[in-house]
Length: 313
Image (tube, rainbow, N blue to C red; front, side):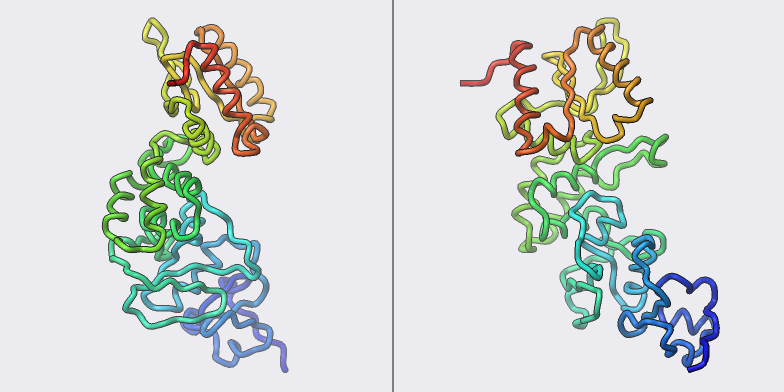
């Protein structure tokens, strides 16, 4: 077979649909050349694509099928919702179709046919994807209650404009509740109802959410989230990740970035500020979260007892 004519630059190194290639002037003969790999009917690729962004990899699988949108774990990853990562090889993409649509069976695609309203689909970088609240409800089919709380906390948290380029949450708690009320009888609904009662506005990371859940399940008071410390003069200071204002206790979860030299300096200054304000700082790291976060809970309990808290009898 003769050497294939080079593809247009836009199609090199990424999967594409036969339809978009034809529109760009690629001939049917070139699309049949052995240098291209078929990823299913109507989709071609010239080389392996594991390093490409998910949006680039999944796009042709959405475009080649009518009435489809990215959903479930695929929508969560596209929308930056924390959820269990897929480990399938080759990767599988979750797509959703309205329950009245025809059956669809394709390689690399897990198809979910179920009730789907028009306002539960949005566009992200030009790709149809389920809205954050609908994605959260669909995740109830495959996540644990705690994982669902983590995803829900991420949905309703208020981001910082300077760091994330937005200052509005992905959705509100009322939007999650609306999904539950709208899809009666849906698989995972029991977990969704249990999780929504535990979702809180203010958690800035999955680790903070899991720490809060462990603290509450251990019978300790529920802490506040990212509330500023205000001294006797009314001056606002930093916001602990979790805190008990009544007991003047701040809990800080220190992730991997806290090993950075600049962050270490800031952490030391923060600890000095706690002392100056008459507050107790409880520092939690990843190792404290092992074994159902027993070590983390023990540190928080000890601080509360020292500050005068007593468990109810």
